[in-house]
Image 1 (cartoon, helix red, strand yellow):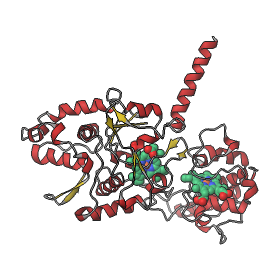
Image 2 (image 1 turned 180 degrees about the horizontal axis):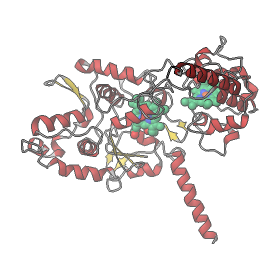
Image 3 (image 1 turned 135 degrees about the vertical axis):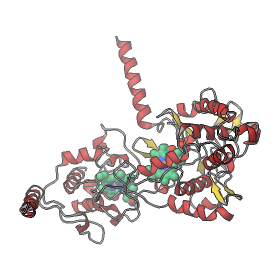
Image 4 (image 1 turned 90 degrees about the vertical axis):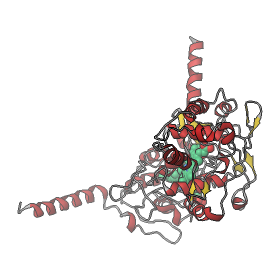
Length: 288
Length: 161
């Protein structure tokens, strides 16, 4: 009887801790991330030059998660995001659309052709004369080369294709260009990052630049970096894209959000990605 | 049919009278008078605040949700308190009603650039939404807290000594 009671209490405590602190008190902020015992991930480093006046250090969101959540990312057998990578591996070789092609028809082996790609996106496309997010590039291949339908920007099939492509760059430093033809869009994204929106009048910077490492109710605030995207969220047991996350954050300021895939969110993605230049690509990462 | 406008006028008058009686003509969000330090001397409603309700507003997510940013020992039984703003345990010693009312109405007048939201303000926002739906608002915005709710929170904070 006694034993039963104490077990129940323990379970109750554990649940409360999980829900409430979301890793706060339990986060191992000094932890080192090594994946599969061999791949070393840079989770803290000096900021890129454009951020040097604002931050002393840039830090991956992994650092602020509970120790148990952190551990899930240390081994691909434990990382639920890797299940979606496996499915996308099948998508890679699946012929779709009117041209009778799959991704593999043009890009062969994903391990070779996609290594390093995620680290430099969003990126200027000379031919199209536009900045392309990874999602835009995936959809451009689908519609223009395969004659297939574009994928929905925040849906599972897009998220898992991004995960498959991201994993080929894991451990490589984020290195998004911010000058030349992308500069105007980068400036637009920067402006958005510092604009206080919604009835709560909060900007991305209020939470992720001024307050990271602090609790806002039960949430332990990170720097809101995108190097880990797409992320597998334990909360809803699926992959979340960067635009999906942006939407939730803007909504939480009691604002009217932008649409995932909109020009505004593309600009914001470019800017936020550049704030992480130097952190390792981690996707698919695990978050609560 | 011919009578409709008259009926409407009568109805509007009645509503005016009722709310006047119940709420002592709350000062409208746009009409609040701040002094140069951001304090608001006159009660927003003329009705004394209810400290018990004020405590409830502070801890309730859909109301003030104040503890998402502030630690308040008197509310310790309601987890979990954030760390964005200062601990409010001695606000009743440090601040008078006018100062607290001003901070709640629009904290930016007291603390320029502060992260704390303005709880009694209805315009001047960038991309305001319909509560937490992420959608555009359907009509004019309500303030985050009503005039009487502000007075209730003021009453509670004055008890913190």
